[in-house]
Image (cartoon, rainbow, N blue to C red):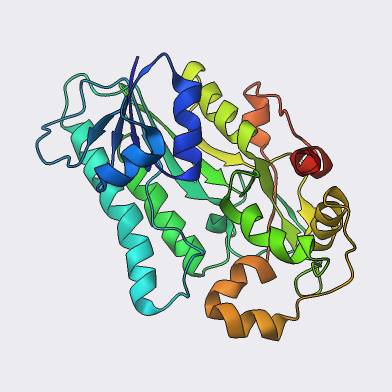
Amino acid sequence: MKILITGGSGLIGSSLIPILRPCDVSVYTRNVAMAEQILGHKIYFLSTLTHLSNLDDYDVVINLAGEPIADKKWTDEQKRKIEHSRWSITEDIVALINAGETPPKLLISGSAIGFYGRQQDQIIDEDFSSPHDEFSHQLCERWEFLARKAQSDKTRVCILRTGVVITKRGGALQKMLMPFKLGLGGPIGNGSQYMSWIHLEDMLQGIAHLITNESCEGVYNFTAPNPVTNAEFSRELAAALSRPCLFKVPEFVLRMMMGEMADLVLYGQRVVPKRLEESGYQFIYPEISQALDCLRK
């Protein structure tokens, strides 16, 4: 099986490649030198797609590329950069898929639970149809719309609405660790907002599940079946590190530091993976305490 990955040097992509072996994996990246440092020299890299007339050589395309959404304040320029980094590559990939006579059998394309926008404590599965109209929703809505254009009787499309990925290898958890290690961690705001998360291993095995199960298509929430409030997550993280959980981060402090981007952590969604479980996937880490056990080792 031949697989093309965009965003292969990111946290999920770089962790996914070993799972996909012995498949023949190619990675599209604009920075081959950096990707080689992360992934090694045994991967075939594409630095451009302009020389391709189609993607008929590939069986599966996994589209994970995108500017990190929470690394910088959301200025108008940064928002455009976040949008362009997702929409442009998705348009290019879909155009190449549709140009072929024997296109890839599967396109897996990224998205996020930000599609739903800010919600309260309502349990949200893939049938939820009342998203809050804000930047994260607008970003994901168009991203998904573009990916769906590859759907045909030859190509199935699976869209991953991903929650907060839990792993000690990096990502969001790495950014949270320092204050908790210092005994200064605690809930954000009032802590009642829900946090929908997924352990990295379930993220990877879930993608592999979509590849091997040909009946899978459409939108899938890639979140663990048991979302928790931010207060509960904070208590579990502090316990995993054997530290107290005494402090709170006031909303106004977060607003000063992050601006509009603070919405990502001040508001939440209680998202469950209904379709992924119905398709037969069994979670390795269904509970947050299990997912954070890696920090105790």
